[in-house]
Length: 362
Image (cartoon, one colour):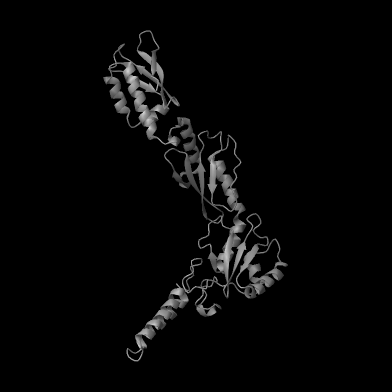
């Protein structure tokens, strides 16, 4: 590491200026030392760049003390260079690039215009912020903004949980408020899709996804008799005929598929996905509120076609109306079976079978 060089900038030799190189000269810091008396460091003061002040924020007192106690300016410069090397080593690469005050002032002004009530997160370096924006129906959406060091010359990176990629029309004059307006318009363009999906969620037994996100445009529905239906809506044309995949035994899903194809001929651009599918399949959709006697599949099988007596990992169905029935049967069995006359093996098997059927419905 080369020794720092400070040269005098006035005839009295009370002002010295120079540069300190650290990390094999990949970083350069400007400094300026003012002496009260030529050749005497006691009472001297140090001036440096804003970037260097930010880097030495937690050790400025130590630097100033060493300036007063050093025997020579060259000795102080070398010690300051070592301190900078240590501080730079503690920083992550992303924090080594400090922005000028104008960068932060602009961001603060733009956040003020957007509204502080919309800001839900901002990191300490002002490089990532999250804004909350409500759509036409009051749903809350999060827009994540990753800001470039060259902002606003370089467009930030935008992330949002939407069915399609959110593309921002960016110019140097574009502000955060302009981005929020574009994002709001993007949310409005997806309202029809979300209305169609809400209709399905409200009137059908959806087993996948369990907690759909705004970006999800697919649903898997229970048809009954160990059959299910995967519905895939087109985010760009949500009222168009969706792609439908019938799952289950062919003798069961065949009639559903034929009915759907017949009904699809009546599909129009104004059709509601839920209502037309309901009519096309010629059978009401099952819902999670269905009673156990309304389900036409055996109770030892899950409605999503799993043949296991255990709880299905895919749909995690809970038939709440069936639970009291099995609890009652279990209680009655244990209360009315006499202690004598029934072998312990039979009693244990009976309890196990009842308990297994009960657990299947949890």
